[in-house]
Image (cartoon, one colour):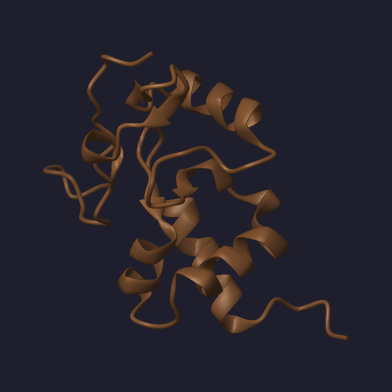
Length: 120
């Protein structure tokens, strides 16, 4: 077995690294941005190889933190001031409307890392 990452995995991880602090993309967003694969393929890449990139910025579409990694993810979200909201049950969830990043550059030509400072 080769130690080299599959080309698709490299592309997924490159997108994960581009997501600005305080912002997120869904698995489906990453696949759409790449123009190939789908949410399951992106999720598989992140599960196998995502530990070396900001994995907490690639999320499920429902905004719930990755099962089994909730506390670590929430710590990152709070550190980065990622917009969160509370569920009806009082559990934190990403505020996808405010936290979602579309991959477009900001007004200065770089990544748009601006975010609403109102967070949990």
